[in-house]
Amino acid sequence: MDYGYYNGEIAPINEVKIPLNDRVVYFGDGVYDATMAYNGTILDMDAHIERFYSSLGKLRIPVPLDERALRAELLRMAALGEKDSWYMLYWSATRATAPRRHAFPVDTPSNLIITLTEQSGLRDFTTPMQVVTYEDKRFEYCDIKTLNLIPSCLAAQAAAEADCDEAILHRGDIVTEGSHSNVSILKDGSFITAPTDYWILPGIARQNLIRAAREAGITVVERHYTLAELLDADEIIMSSSSAQLSPVNAVDGRAVGGKAPELLSEVASHLAQHINSQFGFECCR
Image (tube, rainbow, N blue to C red; front, side, top):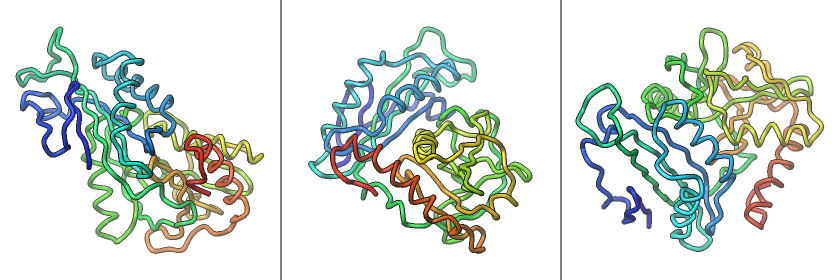
């Protein structure tokens, strides 16, 4: 069963009700975070909670719970999952419940939403993705995990209509990230990934990849790179909470990657150690 939570009340997800005056309805006024959970263990919980509070601060949304209380509620929700089943644990804070007005309401508490939805598990590291490229038309708050995701949804739809797994976004010739993931490349023995400026989300899975690359002795370079560099890369890697490492084998129908399988395998091995150590068994390799 999938569960929902609204300000402390828990019910089957389809039974949870949100007031129409919640600002998420009118403005998408809120932030969120999400990660995978298994047998009550939440993957990279500390990093996700830290990013959640960072997003709250950047949009000046009141904190719904202090860190200790939020952690307790997330663990309470994760514990509802069936034994030996994977779940996506998602939580968001909306600014307030108040009559529709663009300016922020005064002295009104924020609302906390949590959902626990069953998943098939983490995507296998060896399963490749096919992707399309798509012009990045988002506003320049991409470093905030905001609920305003329409441009990303349009990009993901373009990928779905092309029978692909993901869209890689670009501003002019500069690669930014995926519609719901980060993108990095391996080239000439270096791991190259876009810097965490206002054009990309500072992905937790991206952080995991950087750590894994360094543990494998690979030079990490955080810089902007072009579509031409993307297509010429030895390997292209997509990363997200549910697909921590996914190699790309086609971009816009053109075969790519596959030129540094040993290096990619080294990164995957160190990443797997990081994830497996949290869950206590070999859930990925």
